[in-house]
Amino acid sequence: MATPSKFTAPWSTSLKATTVFVYVLLFVTIAVAIYKGAPMPLILIVPGVAVLTVCVTALFIIRGYELTHDELLIPRLIWTNRIPLSGLSGAIADPKASYGSIRLCGNGGLYCFCGWFWNSRFGMYRVFATDFKKTVVLTIDGKTILVTPGDPEGFVKAIKEE
Image 1 (spheres, rainbow, N blue to C red):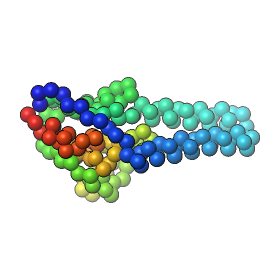
Image 2: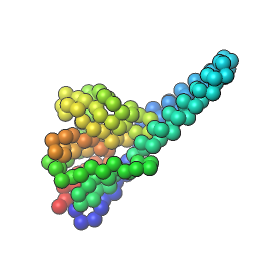
Image 3: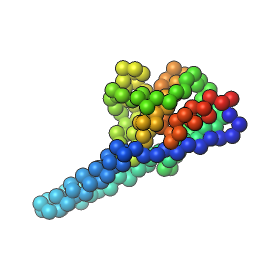
Image 4: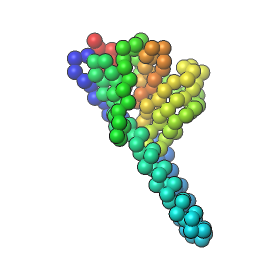
């Protein structure tokens, strides 16, 4: 690939809804603790945990995807995941790739879907996603990675270019 290719990471409706739901749930929890006259330590702890949850998970936001000649870069808020492409053996757009998956460890919808998942098709695999309808399945050194660029077909074309 001659020049780096950049792709967006648009949020799906379910990702937006989950993020809003979590915000509302945290706000309601704080309001109920205050309204019910919870003891002072609890009134301080509940908002602290809520703010910590929002701030820590915000670090995992996926800001896009960038293909270089030898790496897939996934910029987060304050770091970038780097995935070497030297062992790439497959790249296909497949919006149904995550069907039947179970999240083993990771984030299930607050700002992104990321972590380790499992399904009967791939076994254990890694996810860096914002919209599962735009899934691209990468096979690198025998491992499966799912990403969700805004233009899955363009991403697959770009990653296959030499």
